[in-house]
Image (cartoon, rainbow, N blue to C red; front, side, top):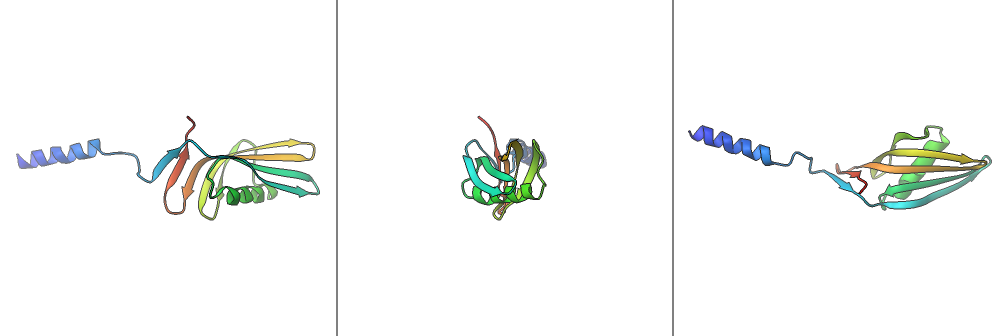
Length: 123
């Protein structure tokens, strides 16, 4: 009888415990704006970030620019940018008009180096 009660107690603990990983959180805010303007012989490139985290936005914008210059970005595709403090997965939208190129990077998942993961959820 003791084993039955103990096993029922253990099962109820597992049933009512949180299934979600405690290191995963969501956020519905972020910084939107132009982060980098670069001029070259081919024209002007503007890097903008959306839903970004304030502490890493400049680092990620510089990495997005480096990926664009290396022709490793595709329009409307998900890409993971490896930053100094976090790896960011997001969607990249590239728009061109004459000699002006706008590269918009939308944060979706931020994997911090300390193991914490933040997921952007629109409200």
